[in-house]
Image 1 (cartoon, rainbow over the protein chains, first blue to last red):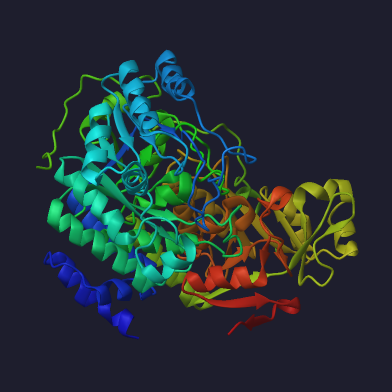
Image 2: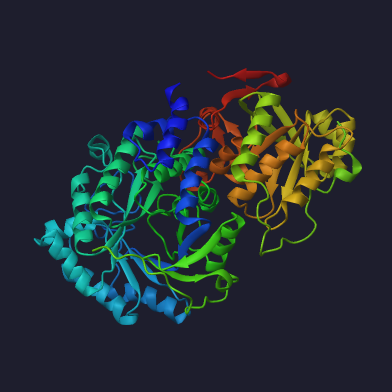
Length: 386
Length: 247
């Protein structure tokens, strides 16, 4: 079987720092022995990060689930305002989420904001949303609006992509989340998300953001109807943009959840498929520094195991995640920092609390318990994207 | 089968230590590969499942009539009037965490499956010690079910599964409990030395909606998919312990 014999050759390429090809990636997906694959991915993970495993303290705000797009894998969106389950937060409601965390003394460092494509809101709704959060806490990092949303703003409000980003940035935007990439293959997009921006448009938004000095993340939705070739193709297109801009910080494979959506007859990915996808991603995406095991989607148990199959980040404490819980995720909607630290230590790794840009917020003794972490520990500044 | 008197301490007796678990002793991949190799050598590269039914303490059965495995939980034996009554009702397998209550049944021809309990924070040496004691019984159990106390961590579970495979006699089965671990983690255990998926197997599964959203039952096809996805050859355990490989 060619894929079985390919591993030694691929291992040599990985150790020589040679980028893997589409054929290499497919061979890795088809390699039967998961532990051999994991061992190689772990070698790269430890070369990049040693035992260090990152997490942050964050809050999710999904300000509206009203969305013009009708993606078949989505359980979150409602097509119109007024439909059962549809909601749009007032600014006061959204700001109240942060205020509640501040009142509780929770030193969150990031707010992650992702919404539906609401056809009836003015652009100022979004800029004021950001500005109000910054007024409450000027130091909070606002990672907001997927490339799909930014492209929608560009079309709907008649602004260039650069102008959309510039105005959002002026209102408080600090970086862009990686959602909405789904799978780049046109065949799959036509079947599962025909009415959202194309792969090229998604990449164009991130290219523009990186050009304006913003960092961003990138994702891949796997486990619907895509082939392994299409997964590897997706990764290679991300790698190509990263070679051009250097602006991606983290790749986040997102496991499809088959509940409460139009694709609920699909089985969804299995645990071995999850780990295999993480391992291949670590090996193919050699120029993206971090690989995140998003515990909300994977489940805590699988996310912890992924820390030995290439992942070096568990995402954050997360508050009030809605998108994947409406798709049937059975994980809690939040974890305490102490719990995340325990999970990482139980995996034999070293926990490091980071901010969104991977500056170190706390590590070592400062993470010993559930008590609030010290904030005066050393910070590592990463190279800023030009 | 008999499981010796002092090998009974697989059940828990003290609360879990919440902090500072000992670091893993052996590299995860080396441990996993040793366990998988031991499974392959003893039982082949086969992953099995069985249609089972359970005798409840009330005397009623839960599960399909044509199940190939009929089992009773040891905790239900007192309500049923002991193993003899359970056997008379049709049970052939007894499952429990404490080995002592299983001895009567094992001496009377029952197949004994032990829930090997582990908890987060305990050392791997302590776990191995308990498993070695279990293995040293006059007649070790037919199988063990790695069973986490509380919410399981993923790596704890796969490592303990591998320890079970390596510490227990070659022919002993290691069962991954889908209901307890969830299908993702149970499937991972197949890569770390487990050889059987333990789950309610149903003919047809309803959509994951409403009360059925968290139903742990697997269809035969789902069980086959999980086993094949783990790189093993799926086989169904039929009545009389016959194994039917599924092409």
